[in-house]
Structure formats: structure tokens, C-alpha cells
Image (tube, rainbow, N blue to C red; front, side, top):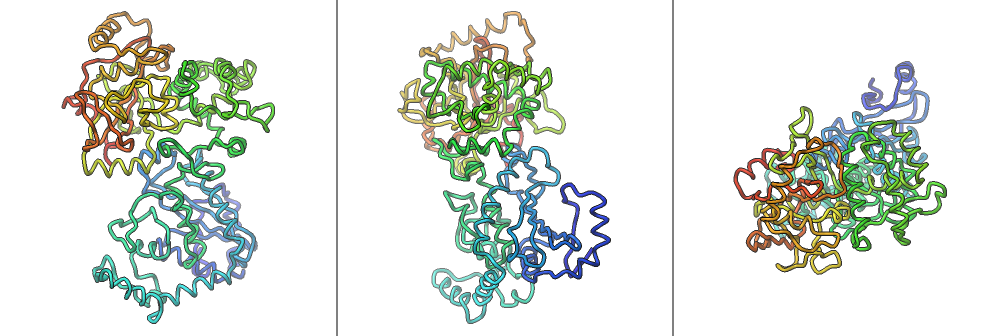
Length: 619
């Protein structure tokens, strides 16, 4: 129905029923009689001019002085692996639904905000974080925002574009350094733009109206002020966009700035994380006590039940890593981060507090966590009750183990599954416990791909004892040379140690828990042959880990620049941004994989590329 040149749509409505739709139809003529503030119409038109006709939709409520404005934010700029880890649909816009007073608009009450994806209503945790961010932003803006104030800002914009105004002076000043080309990709702004639609490319309008860095450029080759088409750096994503094009455009631009860097900020306090190796892939809560308390009220923790149902093998691995770190003689160094868990009997205190570490109590709670195998065989609520009887801190600890993981981990199937990403197991690794492991945040992955275009890349193994992976998954693969985390020495200098030869990395993976002698290749071959001749008492395709005696190695992609130092088959990469984890392999009861694998072998490279497909290696 068209009312005063606007349209409504209920396609994206969340929870509307037929009776409501019928009511809207009956009261449509009444709605036309309600006063609509002209500034609201002007702001809606600005959104459509700058983005597209479908970027904003309007729904009125008949005789009620309320109006819903749906703003559609395009998120197709997110990488496939990022959107998968964040559980968002990159092919579908995120909808920001704001409810204003129809007659008062900016002079009325502060608008309510809903954030959703129409086809992604279950487990849309990113929507909770973005809703909180935009709510805080709107509250701050509303302190000084009014229709008159906005009108003043827009009048400044109009005078800026007049022939005798600032734009003419701006062009003259710019021409001193470089003449403005008269090509279609960079047209001269005409005064007629004020009478109709803005006669400039979308990117240029974005640059002129937004003094911060934009992350949603459709044509990154065209630059006005020379900003790089990359994600935000530092606090740039919190810069306040200009009001010159209205409040609706302002909040859309702010949402576009924040979405690519949500993983860099605490989901509760919205302060930037401080990690040893930069931010990680998944959004998370920081370690501040108030944030830990508030985290429980956001509902993000409720995903624990879903994780056990859909990613049980991954939860099993996370618990095993946590146990290995906690039982290590080096736990005071490597068990990092230490859990922040609210006491279920006293919500005002922390049962597990990084400032007051109690490893014995932590071990008791971990011992009371039932095996993931058992948890998948019965009612989750019943199993939770059993754990609560054993130890009231067992289930909260399990929730923390799951939610504190900052990496994207998926168990690889033996063969490709229809309807799922084109990953399957690498047969030459000889273990059923194979995982896709992506831990790099979007910014690091972008830097990695830029370097890859310049220098190329290859694959190499990284071996580290399983006790170290509890920290690696949460803090990233870091350069531990000459730090307290160093275990094996740094004979070839400072950096992340890698090898194209599996036997070398298998040797490093077995070192830990006081074992500091790396086995020789002959010993590894003998062990491999022995393990593969012993009759298997259980299926090699066991779904869950059945032993606490575990070895593991990662297969990484590394940039082949001059920074990569090759000392025979031991490689050292001093630039942490040049190493990204791709796969993770776990072996039980002293078992090891084939010690003769060489990632530089064309057959091995072909198999890796065939398995990894296009999901990670190309974009």
C-alpha cells in the first residue's frame, strides 16, 4: 500500500500475524490522515538516494503514532569463513528496525532498535552485540539530537555544495596537488544533485559524508581522500559519521563501520580487546569482572546446549585441551586465559577468578564434567542436573570452555557431505580426528591475502604439545621465542617454527609434560609401523577422543616471502601475520601419522588443495 509516496513491507516482519496485517489494511486510510514529520520523509529519501531504493522500508501502525523504519545493511563484504564462524548469512542484509514517533521523529522518544536477519532467527548472537552497540550509539546521539538541529546540519551541507560555497574552494585546493579527472569514475559534482538524486557514485558519496574509514565500498579502486579499502584500525570504527545526510544514514554508516570489527571488541563493554597477537576470529567477552557478570544476561552463554548437540566432537576436543593444560607442570604459564566464571549460588561473586587462581578447585570441577559422549546420549537438561549434583561449578566451567574459544573449528567428515562446505579428511594424515581450524580474525586474514598476492604461499606443519593449544585457540599462534612460553629453545632465531616434513613436527608435538627430547625420524617411523600393525580394539573412525594420551599437529599456510627463514627442513617465520592455521590433527595413545609426509611434494600439495577447496585458499 502506498501512503504519501512511501511504501510498507511486511516481508521482513518478525512475528507479525494475519490479524495485524488485516488491521493495517483496514486502517490504511486512517494512516494517511496522521501527520508525518517532513524530516522523517527527507531522511528516508536520503537513505534511498545514497544506497538503493530497497535499502529502507516503512511500516505505519494505523491510528498509533508509531512508525517502523527497516534499514537493510549489506554484509556481503564479509569473507565466507568469517560469516560461517559468526553464524550470519552474508548473502542476506542485516535489518536494523527502528521505531520512531511518526509525528515527532527526532523530537520524540528515543527509538527502540531490533537487529535481525529474516532467515537467521536462531542463534543470531551477532545481532545481540550489534543491537547493544547501536543502542548505546543512539542514546548518546539523542542527548543533543532534534529535528531543528538536524535541519541546521543539512543546511550546512547545502551551502557546502553551492557554486560559491566550500565545494568550489575544495576543488581549487585539490587541483593544486592533482587535477580532478573528468572520467565517468570521478565526475564533477553538479549543483543539480540537490534537486534530484545524488549524481555521484556511491563510493564518493560515502567518502564525502563520512570522515571515518568505510568498510563497505562497492568500488574500492575509486578513492577520493586516499583511504585504504581495509578494515578499521584502532578506534576509527567508532568515529561518529556526519549528520549532514540525516540520522538514518548516520546510523547505517555507523553499523557498517562496526560490523567488520565486532570480534575486536568486548560484547559487553564494547572496549577493545588486548591480545598478545591481536584480535581473534570470534566475538567474545573480555576478562573484566563486571563484563563477566553481565555476559550471563546477554543470553550468549545459552548456546552451550546447542554446541553440544551440533559440535560435540569440537567440544570434546576443547575439554581435552583444557584438561591437558590444567594437568601440565607448566600450567601457571600456559593455562591462559584462566576462567572467569560466576558463582551460580552467588551471582555477585566469581567462583573462578583470574586474580585468585585455584587450580585444585578448577581440576575438581573439570573432573565432574561428564564425557561429551555421555552428554550426546541423553537429555541435556537431565545431564546438567547430574553434573550440578556432582559439582555445581562443572556446568558453568563447561560453558566457559565453549564460549571462550576464539577460533572456528569444524570436525572434518571422511568424505564430502552434500550441502556442506567442500572439506573432507586428508587421508595421508592417518587419523579420524581431523579438524578445520581457522583462528585468524578478518583483519589478519586480509593482511595475509595481501601478502600472499605479493609473495605466494605454501603449507607447512607446526608441532606443539596439546597442553599448549588451550592457549593457542584463545590467544592465537604467537611468536614465543625468548618468552616464558618458549619450551623447545630457539636455535634458529626468533619466530614461529614450521616444517614441511611431518616427522619434525610430530617430534615437537610429543614434547611436553617434562619430555624435552625430540624423537628421531627412525623412532617415529618405528612407532608409526607398530601402531598400524596392532589390531584396533575400537573403530578407527571413533567419533570422540577415547584417550588422554594425545599428540597433535597443525597444518598451516605460510607466506613465502624473504622473511621466511629456511634452515633445511626447519623453517622460522618471524612475522606472525604470515602464518595462518588451516587444519588440526589429533592422535591417541602414542599413535603418530606417516613420518614421511612432505608438504612440498606435488602429490601432497594437490591433495591439500583438493580438500581445502575454495573456502579458505581463494576468495
